[in-house]
Structures are given as C-alpha cells and as structure tokens.
Image (tube, rainbow, N blue to C red; front, side, top):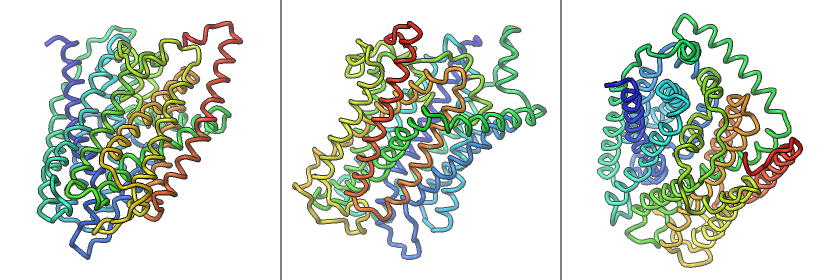
Length: 492
C-alpha cells in the first residue's frame, strides 16, 4: 500500500471509529433524561441534564491539559483509552447507580477533550495541504452518519412504547455499549506513518508530533498559547462574538438533550411518543447536513500554518473545525439554500446568520405553541397538558429539522469569521470559541433541571437576538477593514 493510500485508509478508519462511538454516545445523550425518568429504581437519583452539564464543564477545563496528554501518550492510545471511557459511561445505564453515573460523567468530560485533540492530531498527520479538505470531508461525512443510525434504531426499537421498561433500557444500552466498543477497537487498525516526508516537511512533523522527550517544550508552548488566549479574549471582536458563541452553546443544549425529552414526555402523541425521540434526532441531523453541505463558499484560512498550531495549543475547537469548517475545499460544489446565498457574496456571512436566527425563531415559536410548558421536567408519567394548540407530531419533527438547520448556519459562519479575522493566530481564537460554547452548554443543561419550556425558549430568543446583532457588527467592521485596504470583500 502506497503512503498516500495508507493515509486515506487511516482517515477512513478514524471516521468509521468515530461513527460507531458517536452513534452510541449521541443516541445515549438524546434519550438519557427520558430513560432516567422511567427508572423503577428508587435508589437512583441522577439527572441526565446534570450529567451533561458536568460533561461540558469538565470538557472545557480538560482542554487545558489534553494536548500535553496526547503528546506524551500518543494519539492512537489516547483515542483507545478515551473510547473505553465513552463505553463505560453508556454501560452505566444498564444498571444505573447515582455515584457511578456522575463519576462517569466527570471521566467522559476528560476523555472527550483527549479524544478530540487526538483526532485532530491523527487527521493532521495523515493529511497535507492538498488532502486536508478531502480528508476532513470524509471524516465529517462518516461522523455525521452517526446521527442517523442510532436514532433510527431508537425509532424502531421503541415503536408503540409509552413507557421504557427495565428490559427495554437494558437491551438498548447493551447494544449501544457494544457499538461503542467496536468503534474503540477499530482505532487499533490505524497504521503508523513511516518517515517519508521531505526535509522541509520534517520540521513540521516534528513540531506536530514530537515525542515524550519534548513534552516539557510542548507544555511551555501550551502555557504560552493559553496566556495568548486570555489576552485575546478581552479584545473587542472576541467579546462581541462571544455573545454569538454563547447562543450556540444554549441552542446546542436545547436540540441535543432537552427537545427530545420534551417530545418523549407528551402523552398526547400516543404510542409513538418515545419512538419520536429517535425520529427527531434523525431530522436534526438532516438539517445539520443539508445546511453544511450546501454552503458553497466556506472561508478557509491558510491551513498549513494553522494546523501546526492546532496540535500544540489547546485546540478545543477541533471538533467543529474538522467537522464543519475545513470542508470548504471538499464541499464547494454544493447547492441548496446556502449555495444561493453564497453566489453573490457581497454581503459576506450575514445572510446565512440571518437565515439561521429566522429559522430558529420560527422553530421556537412553533415549539412554544406545540409543546406543553412542563415537558422538559415532566415526571415518569409524562404530561397531558396542552399548550396553545393540540400537540402535532408533524410540527414537532419539522421543528427538529429547523433546529439542526439553524445550528449549522451559526456554527459554519462563526468558524468562518474566526478563521478570517485570526488566520495568523487561529488556535487561541478557536480555543475561546469552544470554551465559551461548552461553558454555556453546561449552564443550559444545569438550568434545564428547573426551568419550564417557556423560560428556556425566552433565554435563547434574547441571547440569540443580541448574538446576531454582535455578529453583524463584527462582520460589518471586517468588511470595512477589507474595503479600506482596497480589496474586494466578496473574495474573502
């Protein structure tokens, strides 16, 4: 097998491994609160919302150390160990215990930071300037397919269920645990690269990978990058964009954990209430993929320079960077909604963000009218309440699609403008982005234990409105700066 074929093989194995692990984990997160409210065991007093809040909080903090862990242990072993912790978290649901549930939440927060940093390392090592777009696209396509398989399984497994029995729970989570373990074992198939690089590329490889003897230097660089991130976080542009980023954290929590719980709690959906959780997850994925694939002109900054920094400097944004944003070279043939918006790029990123907030506001409005107010915190018996219309399954699933579509609008454009503004200093900027997003997601999961649906929607509307305004402000200033240099803004 040629070196290039071996690299592509590694990328495919990486994507398939993540597909298995996140088929299990994303499905687990989508149904966790519903399963917990149906537990018979009175000794268990956990909350799926609290668990996810812990995961996101620990994930944010753990990114301070994850690059150094990957540098010392190596990306392959880091991903294997992280995958084991993902599997253990899912396995906790087979026979839930409160202490094990929350302890696993802490460990998976740490494992997530290590896993995504190692993933970025592995993808970088197996790519160059000419293949990073293709490889990111291959990885992303495989990863996003996890949104379909797990939720499709739930849709069929829970058909006709109005309550999740102990047998139903164990069957689902044993299957998900096995799926996660399969993905973990597949990491062993990733082949190490031979030293076939040209002399000018060796410095880049050494800088990216290093060995255990250079761990101290890597830590020094990581500390320096952390200090730079702190300094950068107080600049005007980052402060403004932090409001937009905060909104993406809030709505991430809502569509990935809260909304499915709401659907599963509505008794008026009849025997389909539980299986609709899976269908909702599928349509969220459809919205995410449609939006990202159809965005023709992703604003890609110089990859070679940025990717070297990514491994060393707490690149907590690697998850979204690889998953959505670096796809520009690979996905530029798409059409659809974003394609139409991008054919005339005089207005920059603002039309896509405007589309995202309008789509989300429509979704929030329909959810407010369609879903009972107590749905997020309904007891095991569910809720028989009615909002302002009789609950409609079709409207509920349509809103799932809108939530995924709007989320992709915001994330692609946020990552695009960060890459444009900080092409020379991308890693600290992306670190701030992911840190703010994860902290806000943790906060949102925490208050989801207590707030009724109307208050959660109101918070997102207010933060989303101001986040859109602040994004427009930064985009207009960026356009003015480009115009002052005599450049054509439509080319950025």
